[in-house]
Length: 198
Image 1 (cartoon, rainbow, N blue to C red):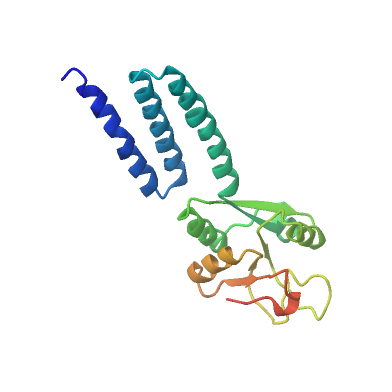
Image 2 (cartoon, rainbow, N blue to C red):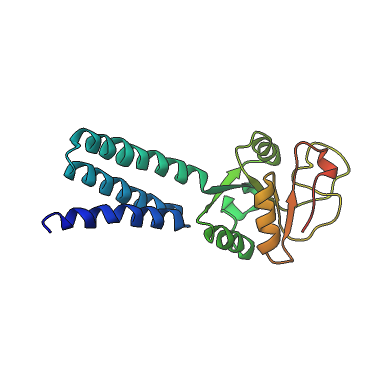
């Protein structure tokens, strides 16, 4: 009976592990992972394995949580480039299209980061070099040229979002309102034949 508290603490291990596996929010999963590591270190210490407990506390809890936090923070963002000259006094784009994008990515615990560029050339270069995941522009029709990332051959009204990531395209195509133009650019296919419009 005196060791009953040890059994209670050990029972927290599978409980916290199940909670970790079932968690959909990556930030909540980080917290639960920290709890799991702390409980494991406590169990090791109670059972007399002080060296293993110290290793678990330092490596399995502190270091792992720090690395996971950095990875989650850097990977859960969608970088959207835009030309600041298209906006009054260089303000960031606002309005319903941006609010819609924020809403659909917030459901997936992602941040929408707006990245301004001085001109279309810089925007296209950043898109080519994968500095941004998508671009947000006022499209204008062109016949040929290097500006095929931000333009289509058809006349499009309103602003348009073009992405090079298939999964982001699928999410936006499915969840954005029908009047919003979404284009997918596949760099492995010729620019004019690679885009689909939603």
